Length: 333
Ligand code: NAD
Ligand code: TYD
Image (tube, rainbow, N blue to C red):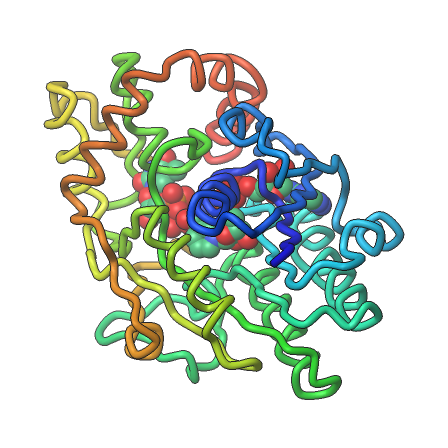
């Protein structure tokens, strides 16, 4: 099987590429990535010499480049996106381009080239917030911030290509991922690396927002299963089944690092901050998936990874991230 993976130099993409190359000796992967601030070829050092892997520096909004890369593949998996809520609040241009137009460009290529399978990697955020219970796949999207709105728009387009053109599409909607190589703008790597630097951990609002944490490796196994066994036209929720309040998560990170709770700094809340995300995962479980990692052990492993890989995150935090972070706090003040 030959796969086209887009956005394979970000956080989840490299874990997925590693997963398939290790698990399936006959698979090959073409990775198209624009290498935005979030793309980092360091995340793929261990696979770059594999003859079954090829990197293409490209933009999923460019139709000719996409068609060229997609020719002859058995499946497209679209991981490429602008993925950070806070950045989408500062400015949403690139979110509309990559998340919506980029998805459209890939769908058109898949249709023209008659690609047998298209997997859209989406998010639980498209459902919006839920106070009690959990969203099933049939729940209507109700996104609340520009990031989730563009992801929801993309999902609707993907579903429309099934209904209208019978393009064999599948959508995965996972909960918050964490693990090695996550860009330190997201809460877990931000808080780990800030704590390692003895800097404040900026906790939004009352700290009681809830996220359902999923170890990235488990998400990759689920996406692989959906690719192979999912029913075309269907959506699959993928949740970690571990709901944690942000304040509890923050204390857990500090404990793992042996750092004091005085590092916690309460800051103004994110505008439109979704209170709680929760997914009903019966459908993916019926396909034969369940999370394979315990949250506490996986968090400890993630903390260990950041502790041991300062050479990975220090250049990021003193580079592009620094300007972003400064802007984030000027704008919110
Ligand atoms: P990421 O931001 O770490 O990586 C995104 C990658 O896409 C980067 O390598 C970037 O260079 C690339 N990219 C951006 N614009 C591009 C373009 N126009 N053309 C080609 N490449 C482009 O994201 P991630 O955390 O790895 O998430 C991957 C996917 O999973 C996204 O679609 C995201 O919405 C979804 N998702 C993420 C999470 C999470 O917790 N991280 C949870 C659910 C769903
Ligand atoms: P984040 O990692 O940005 O993921 P998402 O917004 O996609 O869920 O944030 C996870 C939670 O952590 C969310 O409730 C917002 C909160 N958060 C903070 O309290 N402080 C921070 O600096 C960041 C980045 C997030």
